[in-house]
Length: 195
Image 1 (cartoon, helix red, strand yellow):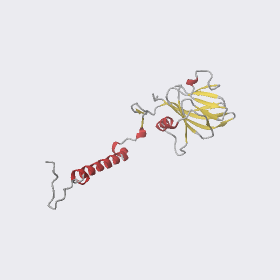
Image 2 (cartoon, helix red, strand yellow):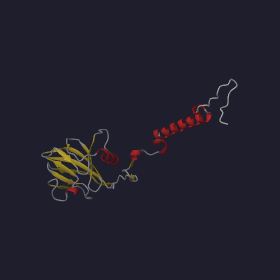
Image 3 (tube, one colour):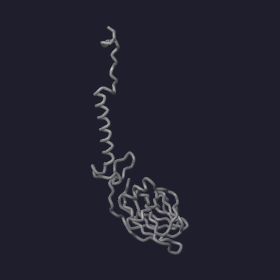
Image 4 (tube, one colour):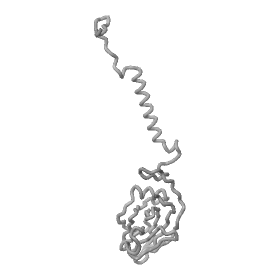
């Protein structure tokens, strides 16, 4: 009892190290294989499941919202004076007001023109810079959710904007050209609300 077995030469028998046992090697190889398979699955996610993560707009803690591309109105040309607010959620088209922050409640105004040189939106604005194509509703929704700003944006001819509205819709606005002190813009608003 309590004695350590001796080998024929009188030396103590050494225990085999855990990592040298066949079972440990098998567990390590299996773990590495499963990790590699999981990483491969993540990298080819789109191929196996057939859906791109960008195809679904997902807010943190909420279930995915599938985007409907039905248009509320537009494209419609709007003349935006140098100091003006535009309400984009009207079903019949845009409603313009003389001064940003005046007239109706400020929250009901979606696009503001400041001195004819800058625009802003309290509900988010994003400058679309891909010259090869116009943004889809999905492109605008994702861009507004991830990179939208409430800051002033200097405007210029040909600029394209994604704009959030007070009723949680998405608008696409193209600054066409200057017209005296005003700007001519084309606006389109998608009907679906993102809330």
